[in-house]
Amino acid sequence: MPERCKQCERYEKGLKELHERRTNLWRRGELTDAAAEKLAAEEQRVTEDLKKHQATQHGHSPVLTAKTLAIEPSQNLEEEIRCRAHELYEERGREDGLDLDDWLRAEAEITAKNAKTAAA
Image (tube, rainbow, N blue to C red; front, side, top):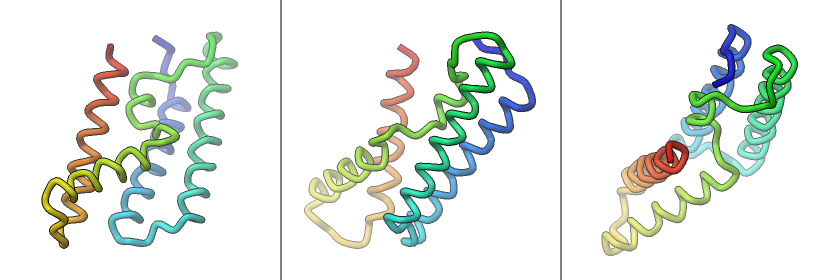
């Protein structure tokens, strides 16, 4: 496993904060396409900076730590969650008013599935 230094931890913290910002904007209904694109670009930049840091400072090929992998969003994570949330809505008979519940359940399912895949 790659070494972890204070700089690695700062990059990981930055990724986590970006992910939380995206989630909070979505929950408040304020996540526009432009904001999502901006956040995705920033997440990509921080991820690349972390990879470069690990390669240059720790002398290994760029490999993200387990903690970073747990918070690094997949390219299609939001779309996966959106599709699963819609499936849950359909399964409930299209009952309105529970969209946040559907999203949070879908997010938990997808996250758990991705964690199992990463652990395997």
